Length: 305
Image (cartoon, rainbow, N blue to C red; front, side, top):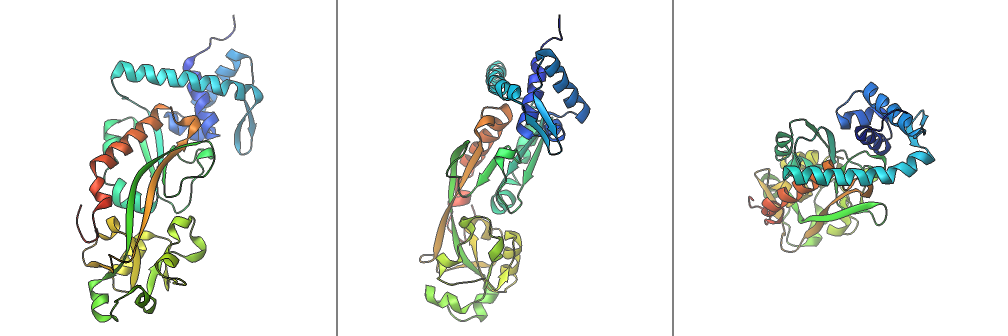
C-alpha cells in the first residue's frame, strides 16, 4: 500500500498553487518553509504525480497539478461549508490574510476598524497594504482588494461597497488671504496640491481636469496624506474625499454646491479564491463594517460622521 492521502496536504497544495511560492504559502498557512515543502512532497507521493514544476520564480502547476486544482478547490468549498455549519460562523482561522486598499480608504477608514477582525481571530495575521499601485490578484499579491475602478474583464468577483464625494478644499488661513473664489473659473488663479502626474496609477485619481480643464497641481505628492498635510498648512487648494478632509479641523470646502466629484469603492477577489474561508471572512467583515458606518462616506463636507 502506498502513502496515505491526507486532506490537510491538499490545503497546502492549494496554498502553493494560489501563491506561487512556498514561503508565501507558508505565511498564509501559518507554517514554516520546510513544513509546506514536506506536505507537497507527501501529496505528490500519495498521488504518484508531480504537481509542481520548480523554477527560479517559484512553483508552477504541472498538467497533473492543473487537473487537481479544480477538484481540490471544490473539496475546500465543501469543507468550509461544513465547518461554518458546525460552528455557526467561521472561527479559529489560522495563517494570514492580505487586504489591499487605496490610501484614503485604508488609512482614514479601515485602519481604525480592522483590529476587530484580528481580535475575533487570534491565530490569523491580518495584513493591510495601501501602496499606491494596483495589486495583481491573479499573482496572489492580495486576497481581497478594495479598488476605485473594477477590472473590465478577468477571473474576478466584484461587489460595490460605497460611493463617496470629493470636493475642493483650502485651509481657513489660505482662503482668508487669497483671491476670492466666486466661480469654477476662479480656481485657475490658485495653486493646487495633487498627485504626481506621471505616477497616477488609475484614472479614478486623475481628476484635476474634471475640476477645470488644463488644471495642474503645482505641488505634487504621491501620498494623499501628504497632500492633506500640505493643504492644511495653507499652501493652496486640493481635491480631497470629504471623509478624509473631515479628519483635519480648519479645512473648508470651496463651492461645494457647484464643484464636486463622485467616486466608488469596489471589493474584488480572485474567483478561484472567492469561496475560501479567509476571503469569505474578509468580505463579510467589510460588508458589515461599511453597513455600520454608512454616514462616514455620505455625510456632507464639513460635518462629522
